[in-house]
Length: 184
Image (cartoon, rainbow, N blue to C red; front, side, top):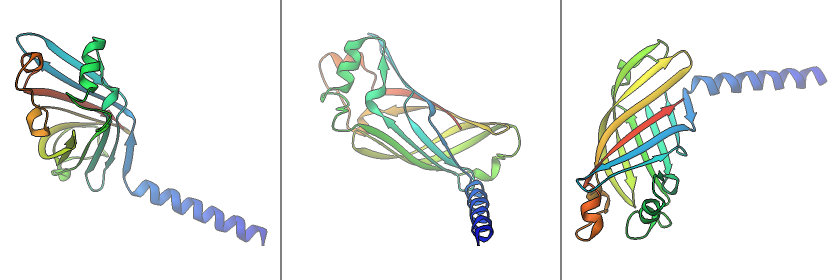
């Protein structure tokens, strides 16, 4: 009886492991999100290393969750303004997220080392507003390591972040550059 239980446990464990590996889902906590704003008055840059993400190699599904209070600025005052209700209101909107898919998955070979250009489409939610986006990304495959990189522009007003007058209207660009790197 003891051998039967042991054998069943072994079969169950091997089956579960095989299923988990065949799903193609990989996760990451090794991320770097950066935004950059350039105006004649000043440049503003913030970095975030706390996002989490997942990639499904079989379906092309891509998901990211970014804790908005984790963006770090060179100047403490910038960080304070960024988190305040007048700007991103990160207490009310603590996370941004992206849920999408690689639309040209047939052009990516996760089993062969190299760089692959990917088209990613999905929905980006920031500050409680969701917009459809379609951007290019580069997937680098090196053995079991996969890196996703992208850089694109984001119009703040599309997400309900607009400054019509005062210092923010001259210090913050209307369109900011977003860079993201995720290592799976």
